[in-house]
Image (tube, rainbow, N blue to C red; front, side, top):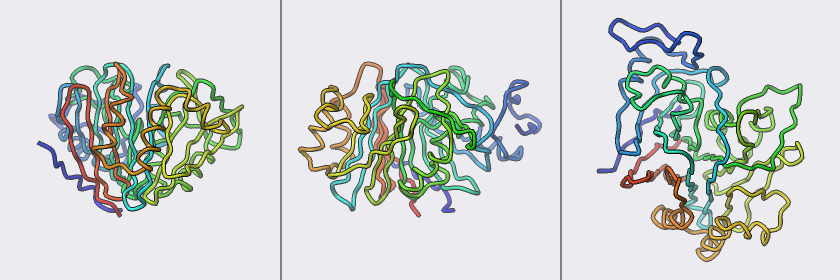
Amino acid sequence: MTALLLVLTSCGTAASPGAPDPAPSGTPTASRQDAAQAEQTLASLRRVDDLPLYEMTYVGAYDPTAGTDAAPPSPFGCSLFVAAGDPARPLFARNFDWDANPALLLRTDPPDGYAALSLVDISYLGVGADPTGDRRLLNAPLLPFDGMNERGLAVGLAADDAATARPDPGKPTVGSVRILRLVLDRAATVDEAIAVFTRHNLDFDGGPALHYLLADATGASAVIEFVDGTLRVERGTGGWQALTNVQVAGVPEQRRREDRRYGQLAAALTEAGGVLDATAAHRVLTTVRQGHTRWSVTYGLRSGEVRLVTTGGTPRDYRLPMS
């Protein structure tokens, strides 16, 4: 896999001697790192703004099927869209709306998966106000709330209170946030991401049911929803696709637009013909910001360019090398 050389362009393993304390007894960990890799990961942690937002580079391997599952409590009030009117510059954008928790921008490059950049609300790891040296951060790869991998596949989630998932006893079950990690590690296209979803049952227990927006470097996009227990796929057409907290599968567009945030996104994307750069996309995200919006982020699905704005923070630009 392409080495994860993210360039910032903005202004349970045993601990080695002198290392931070290990995770609390009984705390599962996804880490498959040796001691040096774990310490290198934790040493990379740095605070970059007052959200607070942290950055960390995960060194070595992890098991994406083990460790921590955290179901987010209700209600999430998120806004997402794909602007693919220009096939050479497809873009994925989202507002993450939730409690005032610290966030982590995480770089991963697993030996058996795609390199990716993702955003994590680290409160779901049980990490406190000062995460320095906290080995629970080694589970951070398991809880991406949105992200993009080196092939230009992006995914994000939002609450969908009407969703119900019916388990298939022949499939493994994963958490409703964990599925994003499996998609980022294993899928290069929207079709491959859909296949990851269809191979798993999703566990919505302990939090709201969710639906998901996917997009890839070709500009293809899709919403994944669970309607009456059945997985439904609503593919994007017309150069853009949007998602808030109302169902879209089988719902006429006019009814979707009755939701205020969806209607504002749809109007802006229609007017732009689905053609937005990062600056314009962040202006659109600003129109649907809420008082509890924690971060706004855009992912350039072909360029690898990422622009992140947190509450009260200045824009931070990153680049993920694409393969």
